[in-house]
Length: 177
Image 1 (tube, rainbow, N blue to C red):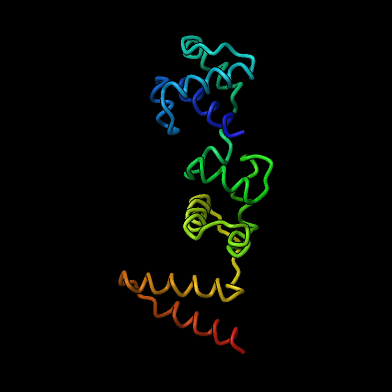
Image 2 (cartoon, rainbow, N blue to C red):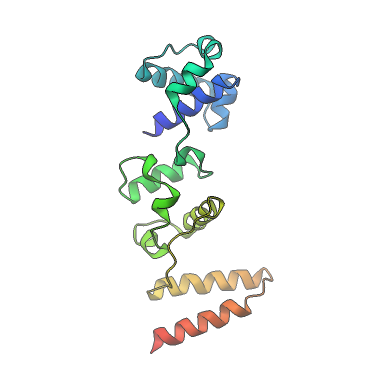
């Protein structure tokens, strides 16, 4: 499916006037690889894989490609999307939507093997979409340690962490009882 997403992005880009090389660079591949993805995508869609034909009939190609999916619109790198599809046992990248992720807690992501850095990137992407990961206080000692490290890092960069330290103290006091 990842090749279909990338192929569709290249077709869209070329139909909107980009060169094949620029279309490839926009998704992080070489011009040669972009050409291969374009050819494969057009063949599957039953369209001629000719750049001149795409430019001559952009509406036909844009209609065949359709609107970009949520995964295509995301600012997440393709390799992160691909890794998340595998770790979350999704059928395709199309299922990795903000509404899907907003029903998952950070703890569930950690249990699936998702790194803290990726969780931060997901939360950032979700905020840009008006969503958030499902909120849940840390539930195990490992998660509490990760939160404590994050607080200390913010403190080291001179952020005011007095409120979060107070919340964390209340949380750990409840956990310790």
